[in-house]
Image (cartoon, rainbow, N blue to C red; front, side, top):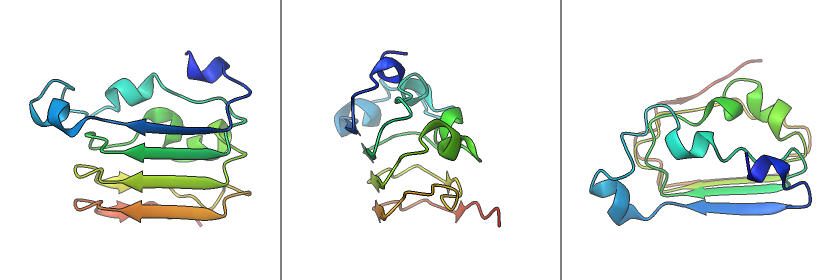
Length: 114
């Protein structure tokens, strides 16, 4: 809950060391693991996640959760999250201007909730 209380934090980059998750020290990442506990405050404007080893993003970002938990987000970056299979619908993020996706080699779909 540390980040959730950081109301003046405007931008955050969370990077996993590839060597740690390649060696299995980060768990299998099926449920969001560490990222589940790193929910940022709703005032956050920019979120970058790099080398995330999970298969799914955390609960606070799934379905309409991302729009509810980070309503002021203007930029989201996901890079080299090799195992990630799905992304939530981003259309409800009213202020979102930039989406940068790179190296999501196992991404199967992005939810569409229109």
